Image (tube, rainbow, N blue to C red; front, side, top):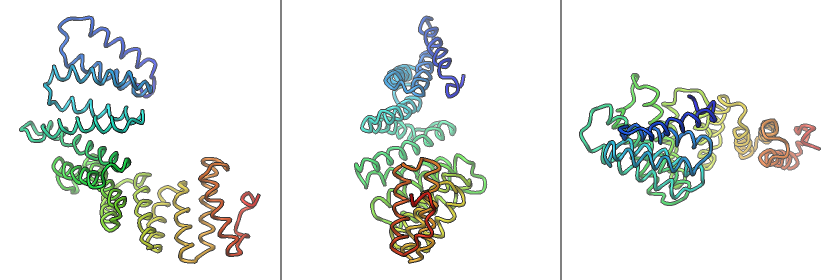
Length: 316
């Protein structure tokens, strides 16, 4: 049953499954844990967050009985539960859950296990490091700490998957991209633009897909180049990103900034107008992002006597 398609029936069957298991003696603990875990997932999708947390915790209790207190399976429940706390905007408890998961994963990474279980463990460890780093970055909890988390995430990706080569699969590549991207954003936040660009460009270099994720990498690199007054280089990068996602209004807005700084005012106005149109079509004329672009276009058009470049709908 796919609970993303049919939440009502998914919940009904998940509850029925748990009831059957609870009513029979001799059911192994790992089966009971699995029932609570999947019920938690269904509740999470249905935005019943307190119920989801309750069943994640019950799954942990039974996983401890089934696998021991340091199991990868327990770490997985903690990691998944952190997403529920995120949905409740409870960042401290999300961080707490991730730290519990990480402690278990680090214990397992140091033990001798079969190759497949080590890969699962270390892959999740890399993901948890990235998640912790993003939360530290978002809360400004510690610049040094979030940077260390991202570096550790990359180290675990290399440890798990090895260095990338022609044989690397999609999961391997995406793990490295995520780490480089997060490192880049962390360096950017701390004001180290050189290392920010270095890591974001590494992510861009190994990105194989032409989708919004790659476009966002171009956008983030463009932002840093703007902050370092490298407007021509920013135009080149932003133009490439805009080709991938031609409906994202943020690209022409940033291009407008670049052209204005280079005193190519007509191109700047054209890009502010294009941004306003894209945002109007997407979010509506009265949306703040649309109005911001309109104000920039009108401001620059009046300042440079280029009001003829403004569309009629913008002059009203």
